[in-house]
Every structure is written in C-alpha cells, then in structure tokens.
Image (cartoon, rainbow, N blue to C red; front, side, top):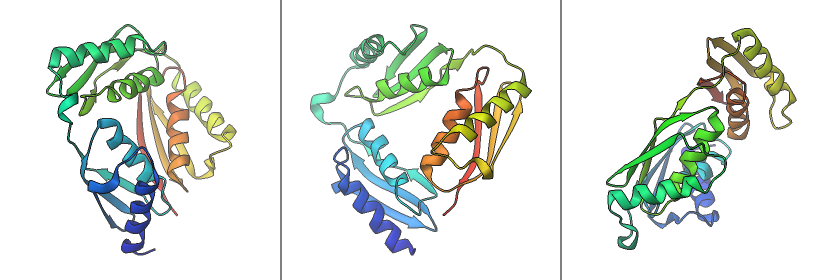
Length: 216
C-alpha cells in the first residue's frame, strides 16, 4: 500500500465515523505511520479520531497532533470544570473515591490512587467526556496488591492464549517486580489492545511497558 492510499483510507474512516467531524482534520502517512493534524471540537473527538485511524489496515502507529478548539458555550472557569469532572466521576461506580482532579485552562489532571488499571482508564475516559476538557493528564498511582513475578508472568501468558481475538504466538512476556514488559508482533491494533489489556488485568501489575509492534 502506498502512502497516498493509506492516507485515503484513513480519511475515509474518519469521515465514516459519526463521532468525528473530519472537516478540519489533515492526514499524512509515511510507511504505516499516520499523523493527524488540525482541530476538533472536544477531547473525546480527538480520542475517537485516533481510534478510527488505528482501525485502518496498514496503520502501524498514530501521531495524534489534533488540537481541541473549544466552542465558546463550553468554556468554563477552572473551578467549575473541576466540579463537573468530580461530579461525573462520582456518578460512575467503577471509579474509586480516592481519585481527585484539578483543572487548569481546560487541562484536567487526575491524581490519587486506584487498585486496578481499569479504574484509572475509566476515570480518564469519564473526565475526557466532560465538556470544556481539552486534555487529560493521568497521574493516578496504582496500589495493586503485590504478586510474585513468576505468577504474574504465567497468568498473563495464559490470558493471552485464551483470548479469541488474539494470536499470542508472536508475543513475549517478561516481568520485573510489578512491571510487565510486552514485546513481539501482532497483526492488528485490535490484537495489540487485547494483549495490553490482558497484561493490565493481572493482579499485582502496576506498570506495563508496551514494545509490541503491529505488522501487516
């Protein structure tokens, strides 16, 4: 596939996604690496544009340089924005009360602690959906229960083998304390995301180094 063909496919996918207004998005491609430039109306739209690009066959990485241009009606004072984010998180039963937020000119910083990565991801997702947020800085610390490195490695390898969406033959798992290192190659971004999610789901994991390569 040529760079021009890949650019066209990504542009088509952005246009096809009803959650993304692609009118002000410029796409460039270089040997599978796709860069998104331009403006979108919300942080969620920026996030959805990246997901749309990753769905396209032939994309190996996405450099998301989209800027969030907030509509005047959604502009908020920092205190109001922080309150809206905290209220949204409080209504989500997956987010622990130990997570806090602060706002600075549209940038929301999440702090505090969580026991699991899915709780941290949920907090980031919910905060990013609040009107007025232009970016989210996730500084939440994981305090997951400790587990033996060997047990973590074996548990992740079994989880990778069980996943119907994933061909685990080309993946390698290494552990150092509570950190997991994933390497190898997969055939799509869907497989990549499934592998990373499996690693984060293991008890005792507080960090995942992602060295997985998407190959077509």
